[in-house]
Image (tube, rainbow, N blue to C red; front, side, top):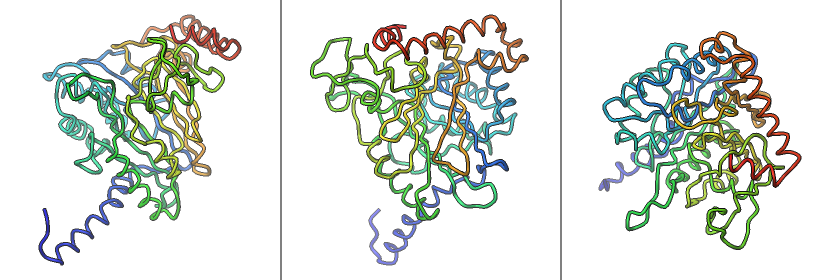
Amino acid sequence: MKKRILAAVLALMLVLATAVPAAAEAKSDALRFDENGEFRILHICDCQDTYPAEEDMFAYINHMLDYYKPHLVVLGGDNTVGDAETKELAIKELVQPYVDHKVPFTLVFGNHDEECGNIDKDVLLTYYQKYGGKYCLAYDAKPGISGTATHNLPVLASDSNDIRFNVWMFDTGDYVADENGKRLGYDSVREDQINWYKETAKALAKKAGGTVPAIAFQHMIVGEIYEAMFPEIPFELGDLTETYNNGKHYPIVCPDTSVFKGHLFEPPSPGPFNYGQVDAMLETGDVKGIFVGHDHINSYEVNYKGIQLVNTPGVTKHSYGNEMTRGSRLITINEENPAQVKSKVITYNDFALKDKDFAKEVGISPIKAVFWIFIEHLLLFLKNISGFGAAILYMFN
């Protein structure tokens, strides 16, 4: 609303000027480095189940919370599917482990969260807040911008209220279509979200006395993944190529297997339009890694101009998965050097060898676990020594 009185204009400007720092500080008192100078995040992606969900998935989550004691859980999108009648119950069931374990959690939405059940994400967010209570840290930092629950959570020092780290959450939307309604592909982080990010990062740096190291979570990977992992060719080869980043063509059957860690079992799936998210992050200089889900059987890490692009595999036992990758990712940040972010995937089979109670509960024998871990490591070995041939094997898994 346009203001007619100068005093009201000045008052409005003051509110707007202070809104960014306020958003940056929202619920930050819940998160801090522990007495050992560590901050652990458990990234759980693509639960993608109906109500009631598979018991094995909850067994995995509950035992992981007991074993690793994360300081924060991030749900990576496509958190629930199913119809409108059971959606609220599915969310209540999904957040119960974090409430029971008294572990703070936050989330990003994926392309299926709203699509399945056709319930607006703003409503879904209220369900998470309702059933997560004080443990749900997800919120809308700036209502009105694209998506829902784009926000950030600062992490405080172990022995003071100084900001040492920051966690960004971005809603990558669902799908984009042309003027005729034809679906063109997945969506991406939009310009208004990027502007919010730059403003908030600037305010956070001012408050902290310098750039605050950070990582970002979102459901869909950025288009730069193709620049990082695939050669560019000047022509299209039908289904053998993907076209991203303003019309550039990349042959999906020959990724550069020497540049990434982990598994690439399916072509990455970013949106067709790139609105400049990574460029903004490179310019700002805070983000050390972008962590995504969406492509359930991928578990790669690759460096792009100093930012790690990281795919966490799906935890789901309901949707498609892979015995070699199904699990979650544990991310560890050290207070002394928060810009050095470490992470590792912990598969169901990995965890079955660590936690015998979990293995017994879900019926994973040591022989089965060792077999799949051996196959996984064999494929990693082949990837590292055989280049193109292993790449074909990977992409057609």
